[in-house]
Image (cartoon, rainbow over all chains, first blue to last red; front, side, top):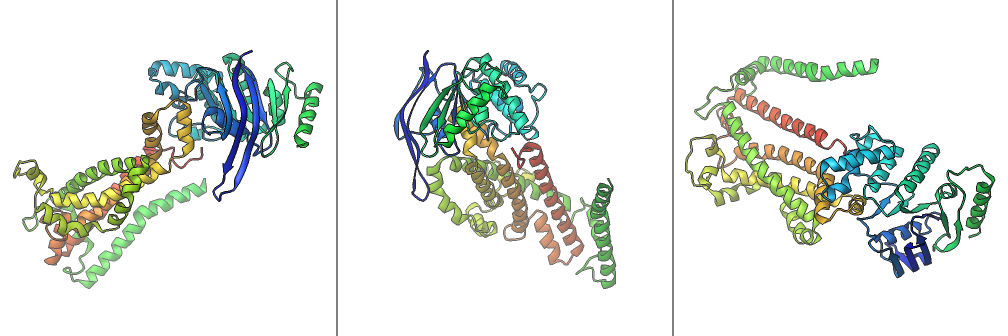
Length: 248
Length: 280
């Protein structure tokens, strides 16, 4: 299978305001196959977000290479959903979803039509003209996903998008995300520190160690979807991943 | 339920009862004091306010002079708003311009706009807008809009508008710019669809402060050299003649207009940037 993203010997060190050097990533090598759902799992501060931001081109690496599949470009067909600041608060829901289409110069009728379809897919029918501050956290992330999908992305980058949500909402959104991922057939790189979330969603889990981030293990998850959190295979995997994480 | 009902009653009292009591005290004390050339009664002032079109000292009426002051403020404020917002946006989005001009601006800014008056008169003499565009004397209210007045109004309005716009642009969260970039916005689109709307609450705050200051400045300017019309001029003219009923009537007009302008700007803010200050 063709690789969508190839990362070779990636290194990144941050310099703090007082001049201390913090090594965030050390020698990351990674190949992400097209169409896969890949999760970067690790403790807070292990540099998983840095990997994502380097792929997006928002952060420059110190050393190493990132090769993107030809024609992949941030702001074009790479979409992203973060935990915060996912929507523009001065625009209502539909104007947020249609933002990228407006930037491309697509006519209002057409973009509203497409947005209605996307809002239906994320379960936000009837909230087209709601203001962002009127939405709950879960609804905001639904809108943010619709906004990202409006780019018709081939690669979707998600940085703890459900991190601020309660358990029940989180579970609903995970199920929705899997359906959308299957429907839109896009490679997805997902960052989380929840083992549960990683196991529910992913084809592949990349486990990273604490600072400096290093890849300690890769899991290929072949359990059929939708996954049952209470099944023996699932819980066995959970324990295995947990052990891997705690050994480092 | 009971609490909100009490609240409504309290509000009503604040709008009606408190002013009524103060007016009553005023009326009683002024009647007893009985020196109308120093302390006019409320009824004497009210008589002036209810005859706003009556001419005084062949200077025009309270109404016509108020109109002159408002027209001056409108002209000066609009120019200050256009220039102030443009400069604020330019400095906010260009670090080079900001570095080059901020020190100079910070030195000129604290200067009281009225202090510019002698300078403005020396430069602009008593030229008016119609003079400037070569129309001479037009026999309209525009003949009362002197360039020197516009200049100091500009000085009054420009700085709060510019600095608030600048702060608004500088304060735009980088996250929103990254989000817009991620959604394919180019630099021009980022300016119009992120910087401008994100800075809008601060721009409106600047406009509100600027308009309030312009209204302060024009009254003060009309009371100093070079003025021969406007509600501020009428106030000082009547004061020289000890017509305190006209003085206080003018004061009440000035205060009411100031409050109305402020209220209008605040409503505009609540309408146009209702998203502002809400948790997202």
